[in-house]
Length: 318
Figure 1: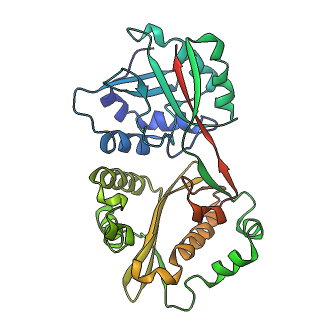
Figure 2: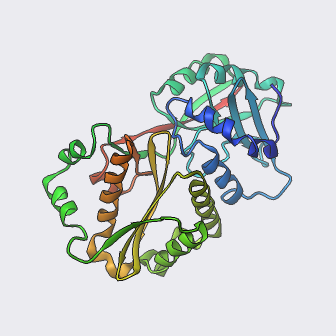
Figure 3: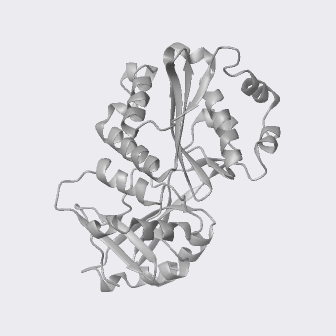
């Protein structure tokens, strides 16, 4: 069970992605190579030399970045911990965790995230409690989920009458056109997204996430990777040839994950956020997607979501 260099991992992303697909109770997109490597490269850009603890055994993976200050191992994306540093069969992953003392020079903390509370992986990892030096669980960012297993109509029936009316009225009769990314290049698509962001109230206030170079790099990398794989889902709301709003996300393993959505401040009254989200739901249903992940909690998402999905983090010293 030798350690794998990061450079080698970058060339084995297909095997990593396949292991994520076999992992129960984790986010397929946020646990996968695109999200994790984009975060590693742009959200946590520690200067070299950087240490990693990456191990593969029988198709199962443990993928960590080692924090320089204290040697604790974290997932490559540790801002929100939406994704799991473990990928593969839960029983095999437990065996790998128990074997880590043979690979590390001293007892080391391992910080796990993105594990669905009460899911199969969580239940299996709990069995480590009496076997390790330390086992502690802590809350990480939760997600808001729409269940499309029965389609859009049953979901709509679960919404309030006033919200259904809001969806019917959103953007109607205002010459709004909803268009896909088509064959536009990733660079051009990202430029269109930024052009909209620069006309939002958050940008004016200096609080827009795209005013941070790290987040610009992170989302640009995600867009490029999703575009390359054919997994990008990006819609624009337009009027008279002008982009007014967008919704940006990606798909993985039958699941949609929302990434960003925004609209120009001067068209706030048109309800384009609702219009785009509704159009996106319809397209996801047509595609056979059953899990629609809106991302972290936000008050507006409460009207859309069927439930909050709680994830847990686990701190281990083996």
